[in-house]
Image 1 (cartoon, one colour):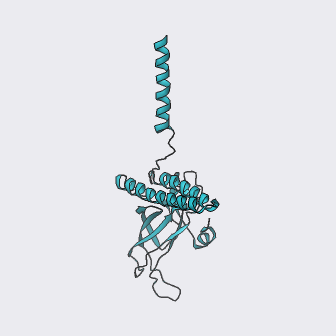
Image 2 (image 1 turned 45 degrees about the horizontal axis):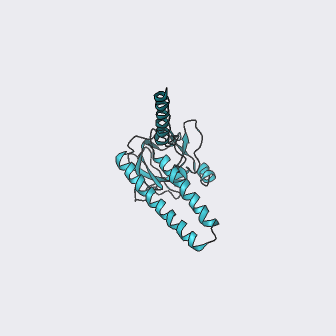
Length: 211
């Protein structure tokens, strides 16, 4: 009986230990963005908390210590994302929904580069019909306005942005065009359930770009 109680105690200890090591993890593996959103979210919450502590601190010595801790968190976050992306390249095409009746076709959307606080997205586009500017000249820049939605079709906060290419390009029929846009930390920290990119109008962009 004594040995049975001892064995039961050991099993309970092992269970608690395993829960602490793995079961309690809040990291989520998104189908397209991997654990990047979870990493961004984890450090963003810690950094935001540290910033609040600094704002509320009335002692200079303590404030200096907190600021140093905040800088260390930012360095740790940068290293964690670099290591994650190096070992888990984000190579899956991103699902997208284009606007109808465009003079161009969006062929593919991919992650171009992921760094701490910045997720750069690339659109691969074919121009189907010449696109001209306001004064009749061939427009040299195409702007793709877009947002992100989750698996239930809900808008992901702060994900409204724009992609373009500032290189001089004539937008004539048959032109292959690449446009680049970025999501900052305020968006990517909310993308654990990212499901799709949705192209939007300039009007919707102007309305939602601060949301």
